[in-house]
Image (cartoon, rainbow, N blue to C red):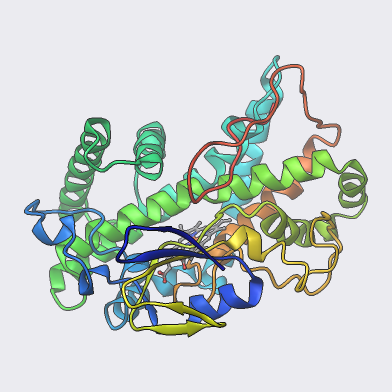
Amino acid sequence: IFSMNSDGTNHSWMITKYDHVKELLKSPSFIKDQSKFFSTSQDTEQNEFNIFQNMMLDVDPPDHTRLRRLVQPYFNPKTIKQLEPRIREIADDLLNQMKQKETTVDLIDDYAFPLPIIVISEMLGVPAEDRDKFRTWSNTIVSASNEMDPDFMDDVEAFTTYLTELFEQRKAEPQDDLVSHLIQTEEDGQQLTRNELYSMIVLLIIAGHETTVNLIGNTMYALFEHPEQLEKVKADPTLIPGAIEEGLRYYSPVDFSTARWADEDIDFHGQLIRRGDFILASISSANRDEEKFERASHFDVTRERNAHVAFGFGIHFCLGAPLARLEGKIALEKLLSTLPDIHLNRDVRSPEWRSVFLLRGLDSLP
Ligand code: HEM
């Protein structure tokens, strides 16, 4: 644990040890609702639809419980399993397009990025053709360092307008998709407010855009960096789920948890954390904790009892984990069986990590 900075009143903390990270993420003493301590821009926000205000990831029970219950059935392992044939089809289509390219392909742009986007777009019922727009918007939102930045505000406005039009369309002609189902729930007026509807869709679009791409890209990169591990996986594809879990641990696609605030003064392993202090969990650090993982800095697709915290822990445990795992597994199976000679082409460009806080992913993987 260390104190990162102090403005004289409240401290910021980052938790780095595996056991401490789990303790933080499951403790009801660390909460999401900062308005208990500070007045935030959100409190004074007059904007009718604030698309960030009511994300399930940013609220505490009982609102969190209600919001999560609304979407949980769509993301259960059993429901997600039914998507398997369609995910395979999408992977095949993308690989066919890649095979037709005469130049070096980019595993991020041509495969790791479109695959989860097409899947989440179909689940939600947003046109996959609009994925370039979503990519821009979601990229601006996760990269934003300043919410008053004009580019950020323009993109948020465009995203909000887009969703408003989509909701109108789906209201007039409901389809069998998540957006239509959630609009119906909002219309019933019991369980979902208008603001929450916007926030829910934005959260699912961003989560669907910014995470699984990193899982596929990072795991393939780790395999390219460790050719003996890549050979093992190619020789025995039953090791692919293990490779995905190790990819999640070794190059965790989400580096940090989202923020929490201490709801009371807490003695956290001998360190006083005061009410209102800001606190983050370093997921990447926890996942490389030598006290938890043997040879923590080694990438090993046969690692046993790989109890990483890449999807978080506690009540905010990732809703999309079964989907991300299935997409990752299919993506690697299809890729390695279709293009067994695939290798990194460093002559084109060295892979570089994107400089986005919270997320760990590559810009490109030629
Ligand atoms: C929450 C990671 C994919 C939807 C989380 C959290 C983590 C995480 C660490 C908890 C954050 C916290 O407690 O502060 C990941 C990783 C993914 C992934 C590593 C891919 C490899 C997805 C996908 C979706 C999704 C594909 C849905 C389309 C969500 C949602 C939450 C969440 C809705 C909030 C859950 C809640 O507050 O109860 N994710 N995620 N995630 N994730 Fe994911």
